[in-house]
Length: 316
Length: 301
Image 1 (cartoon, chains in turn purple, brown):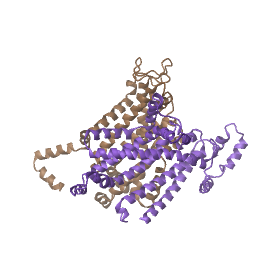
Image 2 (cartoon, rainbow over the protein chains, first blue to last red):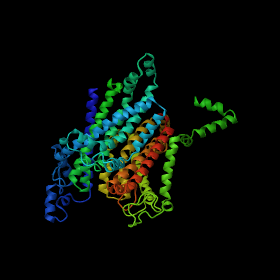
Image 3 (tube, chains in turn brown, red):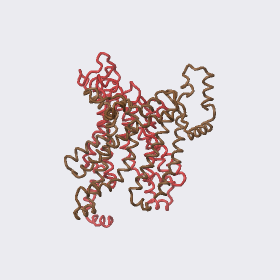
Image 4 (cartoon, helix red, strand yellow):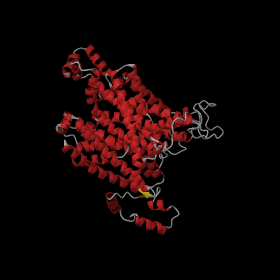
């Protein structure tokens, strides 16, 4: 078991290396001259040249790649000229905001999606089941930035119930932060909620009709106990796979919707970076998101191993 | 088992007719027709595709005809069935022409992704060894980027425009197709008939494209249909962020972008465009699920 986890961990190293290389190639392919972007279009030619030398842009690509790797190893992600600070602390200051939002959304989605999925499986082929599965279908198909716009329109503009800008202030109490989180959180939770509900429902339907469940019921074990302990446990592995995909999905959703809610996270920063052609920041954010993804996938795989008794016993 | 049954049935002409009838009823198309939700999806997809193809005949106005006298008019205003936008352009016409761009991008991007991805998957799965490792590691690397982020960066590299959006979303789609194909190839290439082909001297390319690929196609079609749904959303997201189709070209995403800017004054602009996107995506999802159930009952959820 430990051996497998270590093996899975080591597998991330080549992937990380490829991620770094792809990021490097992509950012070198961005149009325009980074030196000009920093100094402005009216900069003098010799200043631009000096800047290019300072940024190592005069060297051949393999050299640049080497110094880029060396920089990364020491935590040097470069300098963001649009925010006028180093990229690494900038990203570090934004990541918690996005994580708060996405984790809250995923937690909410898991809870509601789970309950809906279980109930729908128990009332299979009833009206309740149909209604929820239609809602889930709409949920997975939702363009969430549109949902965000509609929520803002309904709850902030028309009803004036919830704030729409920023993420609130902890000094005004937790309530203020939570109130700011409701709309973006609900928005990001939509797709995962629908997906979890569908996954749990189909998993539960499979297990509910299996022999061991009938056997447990025949032994006189209460229905809720069979459902909540035995069935749920066996519906978990597919859910873990889906959860891994949904972490990625929610993060992607955050990139698109944070701007609508002026949420000061990674998403708004990535958009600013791209709009301002802030090369170091683009490179940093892209790389950072990819690394986060690689580790998320690794954690999901490890969780999957732990849940699967075949793997746990070292056979899988 | 199947053989003996067939022999028995072949005994009489009536049984032969029955066999043919049964085969016909079990054809993929007829199975799909019996699947109610798939039919709904199919109808939605055909409807949207028809709107896109016959746009010049259906649209009551030119999509870019500006009419500054009547901005932000609501639904049903003087012949403008879905109202007008900030420049007084007819939203219905823009939505119909937008269907052309959005569906073209979605289908095109999926084809680009499938073209490269399937080829990579075929080669990786068939050859195995170091080639497999190298190709799939690169795919893993590409998969590690959030989909929309990869598309955003590619657009920034390539620049705006329909073709570039197709290429950007298409490339971001490659690793998914490669994985699906490779997984299937690995199973199929061990089948008996593939060994038989090798024995009678079929070339590698012949085996790969004439025997292995056809047996992977059903999974690729299922995956592709579902990817079209997500490519529609990707196009809309990119254009919404100002990175995809640039105005004044009408695409569902660029209409949504206008809708965002006039959200408080004319909420119907964003409202209408979003509902159309949602319904279309539901259509492709239903169709994809339906095809999956028909092509491979084992995958049925």
